[in-house]
Length: 277
Image (cartoon, rainbow, N blue to C red; front, side, top):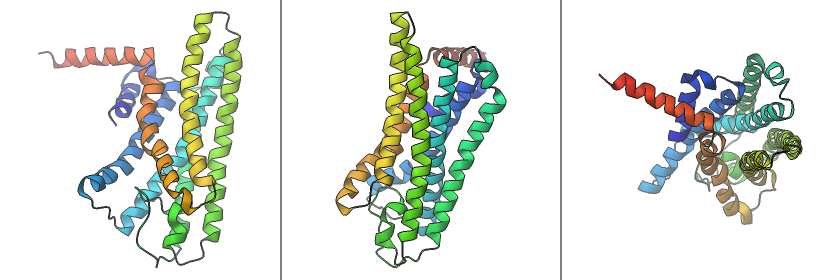
């Protein structure tokens, strides 16, 4: 939370970070902060007190917000990879192609897509009847994972819809991200300087690792056919995109960046000057 909120504050307050790349990073950090505050407080409270209960209304709200944020992040990560592709592979045309208007539109499409998938899935679940055990075998209200065990309605149509949404919101963005990084790596290989290639590969590999971890675990959890034998495994993999990804994204995308470090130094100097009588 601290790392993500710090990045949001820096992107807003520092004029030198008002570029498309940091605009996307600010959106990602804000999204990760929302995701952490949606799931982790209730999960930690349950671990500390042993009380894992939650009201039906709160469960639906948590599922809705999580679905919105998950769908938005899938597309936002692909937009960020496309931005990096333009910056590295088409540097002379980058300022024209990725202007402020386009970056705002791409971010808006990501958020709207997330709200669309969250609203649709939540509405479909709300139409079902629940007369089974009032327990979800998960650490947060991912109702879709246990829907066949807690609902007495025919869940075939919902599960099919959920699978279609999972495919639509993970495969295309993942393929776009993968394609962008393939072009980036090809361009990096053409850099004559060994030091430049090593630095670029270090950055790209860390970004690609996080992206592959996020998309890979999402696809494993939501696209692999449901089975009682895989329920525990899927819960473990869910930790990757609900806890681990929000933790490492600030470190991978921003806090290792020299421009962000300089912005932090400038911010600290301004704060010290402001606080000095």
